Length: 252
Ligand SMILES: Nc1ncnc2c1ncn2[C@@H]1O[C@H](COP(=O)(O)OP(=O)(O)O)[C@@H](O)[C@H]1O
Ligand SMILES: [Mg+2]
Image (cartoon, rainbow, N blue to C red; front, top):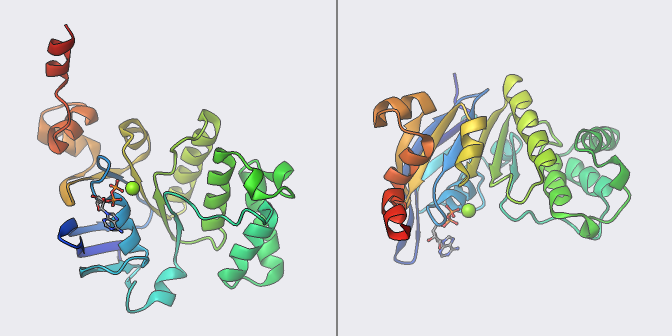
């Protein structure tokens, strides 16, 4: 089976700083993979290379077999992407924005409008469809960005920190939606530094620290390898986080 997402020794250097080092992994269709790591670990940089926004210093990114740098049109038609800070057009209303996104992805006008209406309903945004996006709450903007990424029903979805600042209802909606997409065969790759989200939502996790992958597998595999610890313990031991016992002794 052609992997939905393939990173082949992706590396990125900013000046002297190696932000991403030889990152390789596969994501299969119908998998939700969480990309975990502390702030500054290289999650967004990796996602930007996978989506063709940033040219790797070396290595390749493939979407369903299409090289993102060499076959950008074929690759880009096959994924949706919600960046960490979505760039929405504040002077458009929700419906106009989604119709515009649909047209960017070359949907015929009537189909773009139909998808826009469906997605607004799915995301509980129908009542705000005629309001300018600049007046939306943070959560509504997040949902609008996600709706925009889904407008062309892509087989691959990238989400960079999708649940930051979402209220519980919206977070739950996104979780249910991702599970539904996965069951339909969509590959979902999302970054987070919130372990609880990864623990609840992912089939598999990849942990990155200081630009390099330090662990990958199902939670059960990681637990077995690390001796039955919680994901938090595994994460902190792999990424050099604070030692709770030490904190407790200092605070005691
Ligand atoms: N455009 C850039 N120029 C210089 N350094 C950058 C740039 N983008 C990211 N970095 C650096 O690369 C590292 C990884 O950043 P990033 O991928 O944003 O991490 P994460 O998303 O895991 O928090 C950080 O040290 C960050 O400061
Ligand atoms: Mg980031």
